[in-house]
Image 1 (tube, one colour):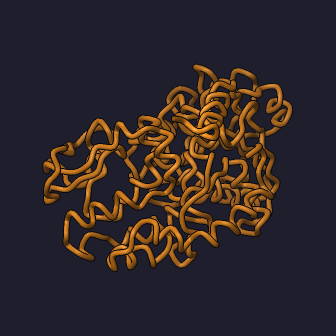
Image 2: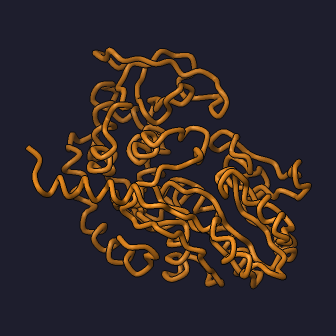
Length: 382
């Protein structure tokens, strides 16, 4: 029989999910006033939608003086593979230059580029993980804007994993392109809140940042993304599993890139005793997936209920399970593992045979301090 608490929790989740969320980009009257008479650069990708139209088209139709587009990982149209270099180009529809911050040359705007605009608008759908790179690109742009004395306006969007915080705080000796701030794996912030925290804590050079907030959103809102934020996050199941399953990127296993269900499975050709199998293929968005064309045996997570995934948070059980089943010791891990988890003790504790519960206990005191810090920068109710 359900407890009163579980019934109330279910009702709260339903109420939160049913609320109409209005994203910052949809608040056109608000941002038109902010951008009037300004030369505008737009850091955005395929997720910057206003209804059925792209934000760039809406801006141009409303007479905003957009001088350039700036693109993050996966490119302006969101089709490039993870980590794939994307060259700067010209947008075919608008004729505007597209300055890629995921090219082989640089991940920073040049002083010459910054001189061409007065305001840079940021609109990208993040998924709330320390190793998801869109916030890192935003921080790069904020640094450049600060150096050039330019304003940053963030059109905020909900964080689909914003209902909790979990995981170890990044040890900054592991700072990298998949981890830029001393925050936990699941940080519980929107892009606007991250920007405010980065400036407020001195992690980013002070700059003029304004957030066009979402309406009707709280951090308990179950917000279903209308557009896949990157090529291999195609479902809400994948987005909820992503904090935990992404760790397989730092191992010899596959997490399903090159299948129809990336981030919803894990496996390896040498895992024994598994009845589920999959074979990674070269496909759009995963041209060279790990274990290409090799039949992998493992675990199918596609039917795990959303609320169960959320309740377990940053869950090391999957990694520990695969580590034990493969039985190859430290060869299970690659150096990328520490960049993802952000600390050195998790690999060591897994090898020593500790449980997921044991390891979780280590980061709890740091996480409590982070929760208190986070509250200072929340723009939406917890």
